[in-house]
Image 1 (cartoon, rainbow, N blue to C red):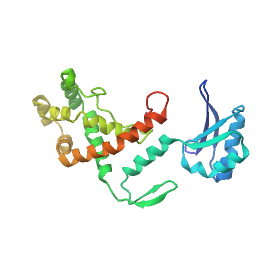
Image 2 (cartoon, helix red, strand yellow):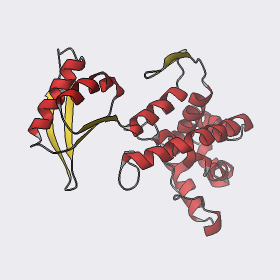
Image 3 (cartoon, rainbow, N blue to C red):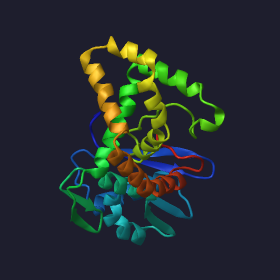
Image 4 (spheres, one colour):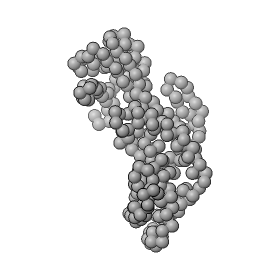
Length: 248
């Protein structure tokens, strides 16, 4: 049952959030009638309300909206904006030859420019976070910075969270503000002595990091990506929770 498709229905009120229904949809044809029936069953299980706002996390359920509205009074159906924005960013960073925009069209894409930005950013962060000597040197040099020279949002290198694709934007922003510290680490004599004792494959990784963060084409593409993606991240912050954004 671990891999079975589960439809979770949560009830959100001014008091809090609770799980109303968890339906195993394995073997079912998830057409508009099925989605409608499960929605109404879950609304009835919630104890009843005078006004419902049915918020879906997936636009695939949109086909059932008309049926549900016909059967339930005082109901509004909507698709979670954060989910839609997250899918937009996923398309933007796709390496596929075609991307599909829900309810719009299939578009010829085959552009890896922004996928490369995200991939290279993660490579740099992963390389530093997974190496004890590099991370220790990074912390030492970062903590030694004068307050006015410290990057916003803290000193640590942040990885992305799987729960939201947009967390990769957060990761790229994090890297952009800390590239100068990575350069300081790679030029640090103590770290260079430690690096010389490491395995060739480790030295090659840091050489690749140095190539990435000194490549003006990468830096330009990173800046362009963030100019496009930053507003999307702000939209997710606004839609994802009542407080700060939830990215994992």
